[in-house]
Image 1 (cartoon, rainbow, N blue to C red):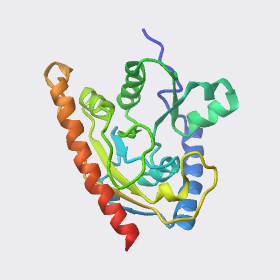
Image 2: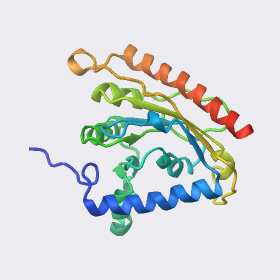
Image 3: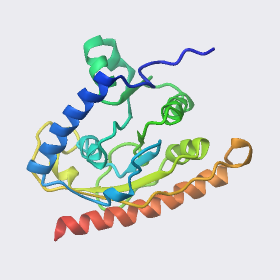
Length: 225
């Protein structure tokens, strides 16, 4: 029987309490200082796994995303972080799991699938790295791939304002207002045989991109008003 890495799956009672406290603090700061407003919270499942797929404009998007649900959201982190054990334990408690930098994309996707199969929600930024401006960039297929592989829904979200809070390469934080608009779940049907075709993955990725553009446009509109 294969040994399951506890950093990837599993959540103790103490971890839940720690995450709840840190999340409450972070979300409180976002609401107070960034004037964060979230629209569409009713679209986030209260149980079961799902892929939370927001647009990506800043490092601040990660704490902003945590405002979508009180449940622990999982996300990928560089495995070098776990070399310092105290920091690694904190990152695991906060929902991060290690992925080897420079490793094959398939290995990272396998770890994402393991998280979803354990019943936890997973954050994946479909644009990959951070981008700027009002246009959603061409998406990577990862979110569509793991959703089709596991049958969990994709929850799209547009996050606006964060690129003005913390720009790439800068450690300075400016208190600008932010908005997150969460869309309706994109239901997924597992393909026959459990193997998605390239066309199915591509079609789902294109659908996700359209949804994200609509949500980002709405989030930017709320920022302007």
